[in-house]
Length: 160
Image (cartoon, rainbow, N blue to C red; front, side, top):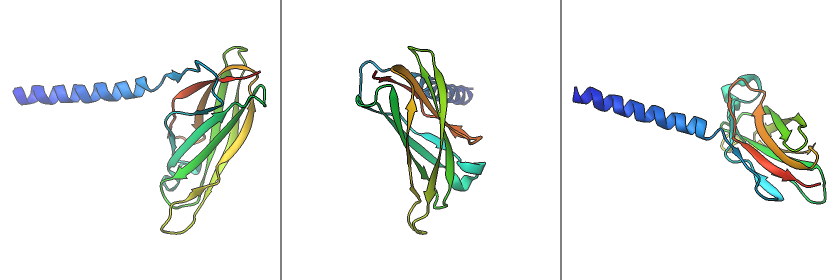
C-alpha cells in the first residue's frame, strides 16, 4: 500500500509540474517601459516545412522598435534545424496593438542550407518590418507547421 501511495504522489507531482510549465509559460511579457530591442523569451520549436522530422528545429526571434522609425516594429528571426538537412519554415508573426485595437499577421519564409555533413545547417535568417502604429503591441510567433510549440507572447512599446 505504501509503494502505491508513493507512486501516486510522484505521478501527481509530475502532472502538476508539467501543468505549471504549460500554463505558467502562456502569459505575456509586459512592456513596462520603452526598449529599443526585445528578445522574445524562449524559442519556437517546429518541424518546419512539410512537417518532416528532418526539418525539426527552433526559431529565435527579436523585435527592434527604433525611435527613428515611428509606428514600425522591425522583426528578426533565425531558424536552427537540429539536423543537417537544408529546409525552410513558414514564420507567422501575429500582432495586436492594445492601444488602437488593430491586429494583423506578417508571414515570412526562413530558409537554411547545409554547410557539410559534419556541421549543422546554417540559417539565412530573416528581418522584416511590421507597421503596427504607435502603442503597446503584443507579438506571438507561430509557424505553418502542424506541430510546433510557440514561445510566449511578448508586449513591446512602439514609439510614435
